[in-house]
Image (cartoon, rainbow, N blue to C red):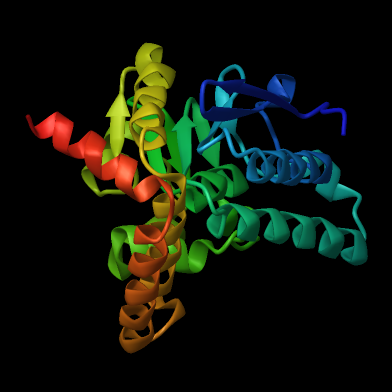
Length: 254
């Protein structure tokens, strides 16, 4: 697929997906979601890529759904758009490889929800993050009802969604909505440093750990999670790379 709404590049073992509609502050349309899914499939099938990073080109991560597109949609067209959005969001949430968001500028609505779907979030200190849905007579998507509550707790989630107010990256760090708020000029540098740390580890272990974490968040009972932990450990220690990983770890301790 030729990309018109994203930029796709690979640096070492990290793939970078850059939302690329800067003239409309990376507002998201159906084509952008389709391109994101295509890029993720490419990342999934490339064994050399261990981490995926999302960011935005220009002054915004993404201001959310392209409202110009939505004005003339029929209900059926809107349903198709939402289904594309939800399919892409599921793909990110359940993606086998770790995902990071580097939130620059505005991250609103479904742009904000894309960041929520990622495993780890960095934000520029002056980024503006929020869910304006209640203000524009809409509702959240992308699994945000669960994701926001899992990240910041039920009370804070209700405050953010009910007020529809934006918060800065710095404020988002204080409530745990993002892992780190950093100066905008060092946003990608710091995000890629984290990506490199993650990519230094076993891809198989990362996949098992991510699957277990998702199960433990409420996808399964505690007993099922603990049963999975046994199988995941056994699967990891049975791999060919297990011995070389142990030897490298012992050398670091010397």
